Length: 261
Length: 271
Image 1 (cartoon, rainbow over the protein chains, first blue to last red):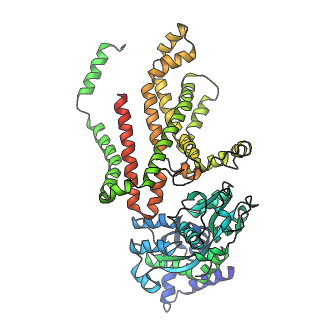
Image 2 (tube, helix red, strand yellow; image 1 turned 180 degrees about the vertical axis):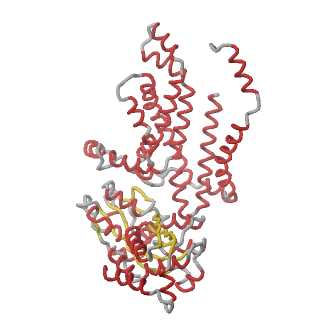
Image 3 (cartoon, rainbow over the protein chains, first blue to last red; image 1 turned 60 degrees about the vertical axis):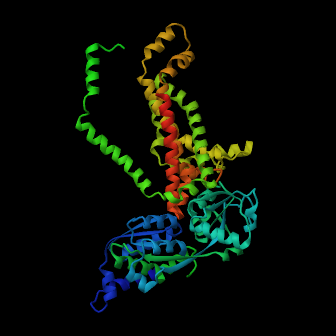
């Protein structure tokens, strides 16, 4: 991955000649870029932001992470942002229909944003799996305290898709406001299990254990990214999206447990 | 009653005249600043669908949960907070300044941090919580009791600070007179001190109740969010905001109107 990062850095630095307009404009990027992204992207985007700032010395990337739906509501209420990356296509659609995407960018990359990764659900349990959870059906047991995402947020929508498809009714003790809140409850051992994204299990390291379940195929979340209509500098924003869609971005996403689009 | 006559006359004149502009202008700005967001809420309220949204069983259940937990939390705050305020105002003990600083900690820290702290102490694996679980099979998180605990944590300082202020303002000579006539300290407190500071206690309780009613961060962190057991109105508003901002506006307005009605009712009774 270090090789890929170096390659990107070189190609950006080399594109200074007048004959390489795309690269040249990319090289002269300055200013502050505000990226609002789904909470599950925290680690990858933080890493990519450092890369982007190294590649473009005049640029400062400001990252805001929260539940996608909360971010969509903020963007549609006029929160100043340049790029939005959502944890599902429904939430991106709210922004496409609300504040809107940058017209020129959308014409090239798709009017509903560009899908750059996928994620599936996994059961997270505290180390040692105290309740002995082995599959999705175990979560319907009342004695297994389970935390889920609220149905209003994308991870909750994915949960509902899985439970509806499989006819499983999970006895949740809490419906959390975002996926990281579910993970925290598992890490603290306050619940016996939580349904989170595969990437959250990967990011938590030894703090939780992951339990795969075949039914997770019924809800594969696609992650779209888009340059917002109100972007202060659409060119800078597009350069960020290019990085996310590049091989560098793909490597970082794969390392964090995301699937390819 | 003991103030000399000339000072009293001056006080009367000061009350009847026109308020000076140096006070009036900032006061009006203050009112505007506090009331404008409310007008914004009113302006964006979807009045046409208001009726059906309010009578939604999910909304009524969240509203009932909010009102009942905030009321129980206020009662707990009164039972613990009034004696605490008395101790801070009337008793001399080492470390009093430290205790006074410590009890205002919940005012300063973000409520979400308060919620995490509560989990670390009273959660299933918390310092005390693990014993509650082992000895009594009692787990607090994700229960209605946890909602009340979160509210007590964030709201009690408001009560303590108000009541302590009232106690410091009360004339201690009545208490001294009662004591010289042979009343015990407990009798002095219940017969003399408490009636004297009752308006302060009422104001503190109202403030405490309002803070408990609006509690969000500590509640969602410590008690979680589940309709019917832990989803109070602020949590319902936050969840509605994710998908249906109009519903969130309606819920906010309902919470606001009900709390204003209760507080206005209490004030009307106490004066």
